[in-house]
Length: 210
Image 1 (cartoon, rainbow, N blue to C red):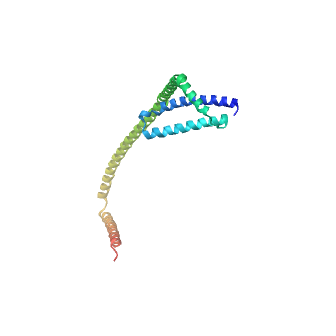
Image 2: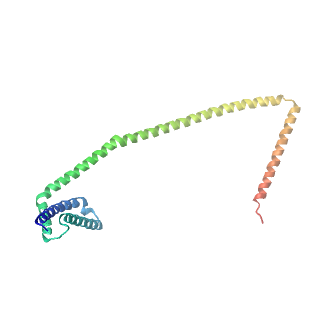
Image 3: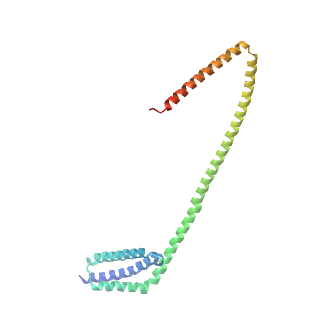
């Protein structure tokens, strides 16, 4: 390994140590450890350390083909210590500022969406539904009113026609009346015969077969 490669490896590992410190603080900030179940915390911790190890090894592989030396761990420790002493306070304040900014933007967009899109559309839908219901009730009332008028007119006409037919029936000669009565009685008799025949067929069909 050449001297330039060793120097680049040292700088890379110092940077990775500082980056690890920042990512660790970010992880702690979002994990909310006191309010999480122990198995969730364990799984997240394991996943975090595996990802960090893979990232560090990948950077090391790019710099010196993945050769491990003692000074690499020292460089990582120095980078982490430099972050803790110099950059941690600034980074945490910046992180909180970014989180609060994102939350404020989200709340603003949510309120804007509710005021500009959701509530007007919901109000329009409610208005359309109310108009449809009102028109439906009005149409139903109109149909009821028309039906009442039609039934009343039909009742009046039927009464008038019935009285006219009754008067005509009274004025008819007795011979015609007797002839009409015979036709009526004959039709009624035929109807009763058909009715009785159908009843016999139904009883025969319903009778259980042995």
